[in-house]
Length: 389
Ligand code: RFL
Ligand code: PHB
Image: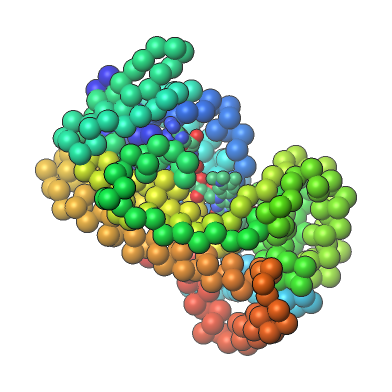
């Protein structure tokens, strides 16, 4: 099989990139390791910046998001008792959209056949070849048979554990990493959210987040040590600890319902530089990971593919290589600022094992500063809604 751009991975980055290329008449094929059902059942991010909603609008795949998504004008930080509202609409003029990554993925997958975007599901042993040449190819097996997709470029959109980043020779790239000594235990349930906006709570016992997917579906998280397993957290214990950490008014409003999904995600910051090697371009989690505290993971995938699609389209349609030459530098400038924001919010809101009373007082002082300074709130709001492309 021959195409212009072979895309590895049908997460948000691969799907958005594939659609943006197809919209401009560039050929693209996606190779995905999992089944369609598996990809559609993954529960992940929930807050979309305009960078992401604009892509869905521009692709004309935004009807359901517009109908079912919840535009939010603000969110809250909490320090025990107090709610500190960050009025993002008043401070930035922008909103964020609460619409699950699962739904974004579904909308993009549903629209693919009509747009001529082929997705090959359940591909095994995906491998990248000749990425330093002008004729790279992706080899994989499916149903026991070997296949190969020859392309001019390969887009590595295969997440943190995929083969693309690993295909870059060790001497040609560098990873920057920070691993946090805890994870987020997440619960999804069919119950109305405890507040109409998100609450990020700093409590002596650790962080908690009250989020949602709709007015009838809640998403809650609590910080847990990495040594703990999902089995250590029966529903009752989860609800007790969540309500202990949320401010009292919100806790009183939590509707406890059976968990539809419960999982622990470790927190990590990671950036791989550069995001290009020869004919291979990395995008999304394949190139970088942020802790979920800033709600940036999915939105960074969107900004990467916005830059990358523009550059690829200029190359194919106008023979212009400038965008591709600058892709890594342009994308990384935005990535590092989102890394900084996610790290800052993670440090502010979590309890670290080595923290003593001094560190706790510093966190509370910073939260009090945010509560009393519009300048501080504006800086948070500006980053939360997403920095300009
Ligand atoms: P994805 O979504 O990981 O998609 C990568 C795709 O590549 C496929 N793949 C392969 N395909 C072919 N051959 C191979 N050898 C392959 N290896 C992997 C995978 O099956 C998958 O379909 O990356 P993408 O597209 O860059 O999108 C990034 C976002 O998914 C990610 O940044 C966010 O979801 C991060 N994230 C969260 N972000 C938030 O802002 N809020 C959250 O609550 C939140 N929760 C999460 C998360 C990421 C998680 N992961 C990756 C473990 C929860 C989890 C569990
Ligand atoms: C979520 O709803 O899953 C969510 C929301 C905000 C975050 C992280 C996760 O910062």
